[in-house]
Each structure stands twice: as structure tokens, then as C-alpha cells.
Image (tube, rainbow, N blue to C red; front, side):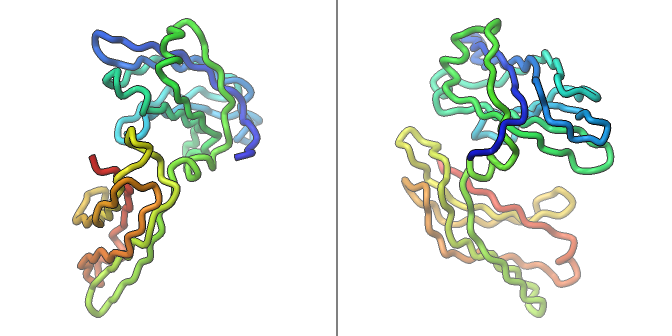
Length: 230
């Protein structure tokens, strides 16, 4: 990852023991790259507490600036003992009204315990790293698709996954792959592979079969997720 930095992001953290919450203050960003023809960007920040990607927060959009002051606070419920295994993921986007929002770059913050002990008044500055980091960060999954129109059958062959993130204290994960057939944002059917124990490079070679009538094959999509079995 020798990607050039795309500005800097400043955040501050504290941990509220009483309510078991990690409180994250997004302070500001400096020297963002200009993504729009007017020489500015319309930046906002999205934030996850990895490995959970369901719960996310985002700041307001700041118009026409490369040095936005966000000063917004968000809180994630997380037991104290889980903090060492969690990481904060900040993605800085350029808002675009008519097309897909551009990812400017991202920051991943670990050692959350130490960071939170510095307290809410000590800004933590990090380089924002160009946007392709996410792929390298979470590993890859290798699969093939085959559709037989005559039988109305879609076969997803899950071959393997590699370089997964360790999700357990052992330094490994117990990964399985879940394929979901989606239509209009709803999940119609799901299939799972077997679970592979204690590995970050599981081999599956398993076929997951879905019945998809020929007339609806263009209106469905497939979501592939790699999940750590707990």
C-alpha cells in the first residue's frame, strides 16, 4: 500500500465505561484533494466499527471545501473487552448529487484502547489513504457462476477465500461463505458453505445452487459474504 495520502483526518475518542460505549468525535480534515471541476470537494465521512458493517454513521456533507470542520460525535455500543479486536474505519467521500459518490480515501484506526485513553480533547491525526485499501484490508473471495437457462438454475461455485482478517483471539477465523439471492433490496434465498476452522485461507470448492427462472434472471442480484462463525 504505497498509495499517496489524500489529506489528513483528525478524530478524538473516549470510552464511556458506564454505558459501554466508544464515543468518536470526528473533528476535521485538512488538504483534501479536489474532486470537482470547481477546484473543491463536498466531503463527508462514513464510519464503521469493524468487523461490523451493518451499523454505520455519517457526518453531514460540507459544501465546496478541502478543509472541512465536521465536529460531530457518534457512539458505538461495544463491551470493553472487545475493544482490542475492533477497528474504526473512516471513509472520506465526495458527495455528488447525480452520480456515485467518489471515495476520496480512508483511515483505519486500531489500538482503540490507547486512543480512547488519550481522552476526547486530544486530536489524533492520520493520513487519509487513497481508496483502494479496502480490498487489501479484508481479503478476497474466489468464485465462479454458471447459469443454465433451460433448467433455470444458477450455480455459484465457491472456490476459496484468501488473506482474510483474523476475527478471533487465536489469530484466525472460522470462515464460511454465504450467498444471497436479492431482488429489489430483499433477500429471496440464501445458501451457505461449510465452516472451515482456524484459517484465514479457506478452501471450499462447494457448489451453492439457486433456482432462478429464466424470466427473472435479469432482475436478481447476488451478494457474496464471508462470515466468521462464532
